[in-house]
Amino acid sequence: MPSFRSAKHQAEHAVSEKVALGKSRHNHKDEGKIHAVRTAQAYTQVLKGFTVFIQENRLGDLRTATTHMAQMYLSERQEAGLSQKTLDQCRQALQCHLQRPLERIQALEKTVLSSRSYTSQQIQAIAALQSAKNGLSTEIVHAAGLRAHELLTLRHISEQAASSHREWGLDRFNGRDGERYSVTGKGGLVREIMIPQNLVGRLEATRLNVPKSVTDRGVHYLQRYDIAGGKNWSTSFSRVSVSALGWSNGGHGLRHSYAQERMSELQGAGYSRNDALGVVAQELGHFSASTSEAYLR
View 1 (tube, rainbow, N blue to C red):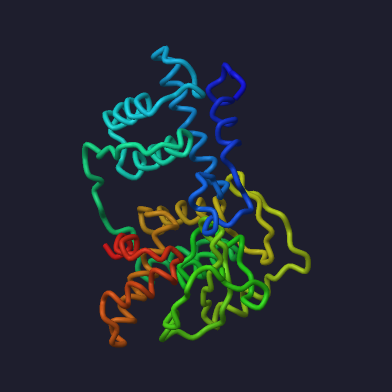
View 2 (view 1 turned 60 degrees about the vertical axis):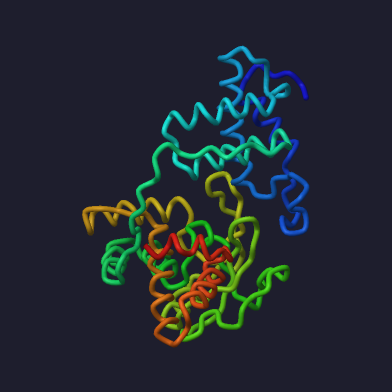
């Protein structure tokens, strides 16, 4: 690895050697590579901070870093009061660079957990104050449990099927009527979503004759519907939420609303809590029951 003076250049070069975009994370998960653009961006920031730490303590440079130095850095970040989630991401980035396991550092204070969900009435009040484009996106996110950037990847299911390396349950969307579409989520996972019929017509009216390229937070997408998404939609949602309600839990709060509503529907239909949680996890696109629990506060 060339010797760069800039911490930024050292971090970017180190990450570039680990990037394997376009390869399925499922089939290459043990190779120690980075398969998502946003993960690469996050890891670059971590390694930049680590390099600054190394330089300030006159320990060498990033190419000569050791696991001992990494544990020292994690301990320093712990004392800075970072959340457990952020500490874990730092550890994962350092492990990827060093190709060695690191001890998990516990956050000094547990993150205070609180609900981020909105009621249907609150969501409608926000959508009504947004532009037509942003308002439609807000309704779709709530109805289908999307992440902000997934709005930019929306396609009809006939155009793009769900990822085949996952085993998808037959109970998804049970009790709901609508039309199936697909979106691309974290790690390139493509999943089916269901959009209610009352939104399908409005969505299809925005279909582009020719897909257009858009860039959101440094990631490039080929958008097929002329709707808002990504940072632009998130900013609109948060701003209007404060205007309409006096507070904002961010656009991601709509995924919490979706999860809670679906749990109520499924349990009302006779599903056990565990079975309902498994269905909701797949509908949200993360397959983790423990992650789904965080949406139910």
